[in-house]
Image (cartoon, rainbow, N blue to C red):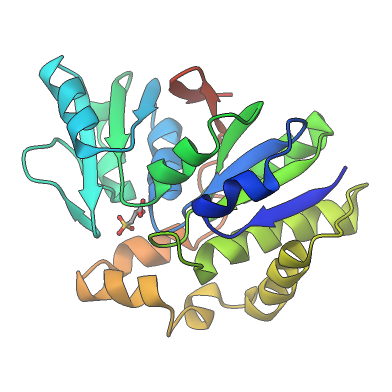
Length: 235
Ligand code: 3SL
């Protein structure tokens, strides 16, 4: 089983592999928020690319989350903070969601045979899931507006590391090797390693240090969100 890492949604077509399980990653914060939502009992989510699509779901009476540039879009029910998905008001609900990069990354991979959602919050659960699937793995990092980011790359490196060193996976992909090297450098203190990174600083300016620390703490939400048609559901 081969592992590849695609650093930005825009590059997805270069990496598309009809046999691979795709792991979409947006550690800060979309995939951490989605993982937290399912861990706290959300029943389904509908990721959409645009605020207009999200608004159409709101008009139909759905709970709707919308974030742009780190902030909740006015008029919606939720933003992108994982802490917003811990309340009892989300339990059992279907929530439509649009975010600056995370839901665009999901959209970029729509033709994949299977898409799951990864974040440090479900790190070991993702490794276990991929071990059971026994298929090629393609990590799709959301990045920031189609640029590379460090935090998504570190998560890809963490999972790749777990799969290759403990089990029967391989990689010949330089971006996967680079992700694993970066993870080796960062693993003892992810928060400190990301000190100068663009999105950690962007979120810190919005006073979201608590979100950053939570999103970088592994294995708090051992669930796997998986795409089924237009819905994300718990695997
Ligand atoms: O880009 C996204 O999808 C978001 O995760 C960005 S933010 O963390 O909400 O700023």
